[in-house]
Image 1 (spheres, rainbow, N blue to C red):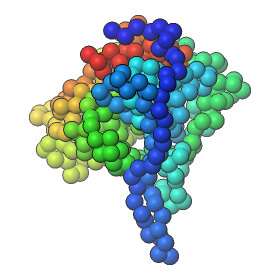
Image 2 (tube, rainbow, N blue to C red):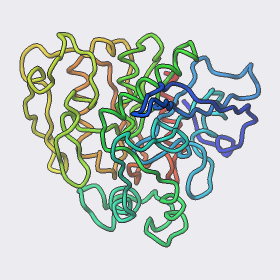
Image 3 (cartoon, one colour):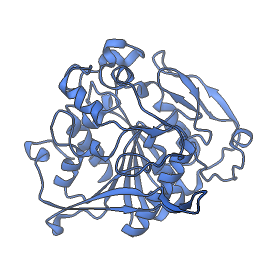
Image 4 (cartoon, rainbow, N blue to C red):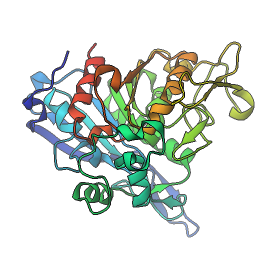
Length: 355
């Protein structure tokens, strides 16, 4: 059992290198070529090689975010990269293709940015808006969470554009991360957050022997939907927008993945969708990969991550649901890993990883 001490927040001596991986040359109408879909990677390794844990950690950020989320929190405190380095882990931090230090080129899909008002409502000051029942319990964001607050302003300044086409984005991230795993050459524990949440599943689908386990931090969902302020259709493959392998195979997800509505167990939860009654299709390449779904008690995900977990289990995945309130961690929202008590959350995840 990992306990939080002052030392767990220290800077750990480490080696740092960065590189690009993946991508392909694409020819334009004039016959010229440009590289597209490449991904920026930072590799952090504790200096004391004798203390390095056997399985590296790969961190995949969410929508409009970059790998900076894991390095320094917007209040200036050390992020999860420092925490896990201090625990002896080798880390890979990426900027998904088409954002941050992974170039986007005109013509690769339309791009969007999130206005500051939406960030306030959904991530940083949700208790002021109370758009979902649990929002009023959000107390762990440092500062007021609104424009003009220095912590909020630093956080919003670190946001970037993202492409609208989630199938294109997920496919490009899957390909680049698969190339990264091939280069690492040994099993990796993969973290994915929010819109980056499908990538670990897609990665396990194409590299099942190189994914040791998956930590899904409030992954995109619930199945067959996308919830932000309102519920809209999404994730036609259940846990992803891009194709993923089922047995029996899914050619057309609309036709092949029959679903049924499942009523929520409590009034502060949302109803969800699972596969229809009968023999479910199995996520055959994920069957041997343990998955931890982490849900914060004040996040909008607190309404529906239960259904994501049930969907994974129905599809043959060994899924565990870590609801932070069940281990006495209260007040967190969707950006739990950059909030005041982030090291407590990291320690709970580490306990699962090292179980």
